[in-house]
Length: 422
Image (tube, rainbow, N blue to C red; front, side, top):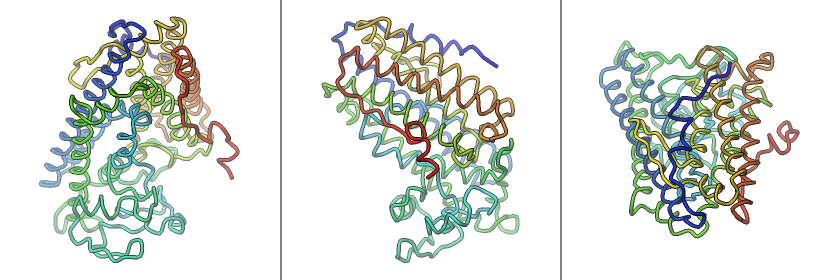
C-alpha cells in the first residue's frame, strides 16, 4: 500500500534558509552541520549499544540479548543517514570499511551452518571463510601463525579484518556485531531472522555451541571498536575537525555533495545493494541479512540523500539541524530543476516507505527477493527505479549549477546486467 511520509521527513524543504546563488559557503556549512549532528547521533546510539552489550555479557539473559538487539537496530537509524557523505569525502570513504563493510563470511568469526549464508564451497575462494576465530585460540592466517588466546580490539582490527586482502573477511563493524547478536539467518525467502540463543553467551554448563567466554570477548571488542571509530568521525565534522575543514576549504565543495548524492543513489544503493540481489534472487545480498533489517537500511540511506539536498536533519532527540541548502542553490539557478529533483527524492522516499511498511507487516526483504514473489519484487524494483530517476535529476541539478564533472559511481547490475551472470 502507499503511505504518506511522516511530517518530520516530508517538510524538510521548508526548514532550509534561502540563499543567494553564490553563497556556497553557507550551503557547505549546513552540509557539515548535518554531518556533525548525524555522526554525533550515530556515536550516541553506538554508546547505548555498548552499554547494552556490556550489561548482557556481564549477566547473560534472554531479555538482555533482546535489549542489545534493539540497541543495534536503533543505532542503524542515524548511521544510515550518514552514508551520503561517503563518496564525496575521502576521509569517510577510507574509514567506512571499518564500520559498515558487507557482505561478510561469518564463518571467519563463529560457528556456521551449511544451510546458512556461508556455504562451504566459498572456502576455496576465501580460505579464511571457515576460520572460526572464536573457537580457535591459535590459527594460521595469511600464512602466519596467530595467537588469538586473548580476543582484543587490536587483534580484530590489525590482524583479522580484511586479512589477505579479502573484502569478505569482515571482522569489525555493525555487521560483525549483528551476526554475533542474531546469528545466521538460515531460512531463505522466509520471515525468520537469525535465531542465536542467548545461551551462546551463558556460563559453564549452560553454554551452548561452546566458547561462550570468547564469543563475549569478541562481541565486546567489536562494539568497543565501533564506538571508537564513531568518536573519530564525529570529531572530524565539528568545528576544527579535519572533514569539516576539508569541505569548507574546497572551491568545488558543491561537487562533493552532488557526488555523494549521485553515487549513493545509483551505483551503491540502486545497483550493488538492491538491483544485484534482485537479479540474482539472492538473500545473501541483503545489507543486514542476520537481523532482517535491510528495509530500514534502504529507507534511511534514501532519507540521508534527501536530508542533504533539503538542508535539514531530524536528530534522535527530535532536534532539527537545518540551514542554507543545495536545493536553494539549484532553485536560484533553475527553479524547475530544483523542484523536479525535490519531487524525485520525495517519490523515492514514498517507494521506500511502501517497502518498509510491507517488510514490517511480515513481507521481509529476503522474501521480496524470492523469484516466485512478484509483488515483493515489484516493491524492490519500484524503489530501484526511483533511485535511478532521482540520479538523472541530480545530474540535471549539476548542469544547472555549472558543475563540470560529477563522478557518479556505476554498477554492472544497472549498466551491464549480463555481466552479473558471467
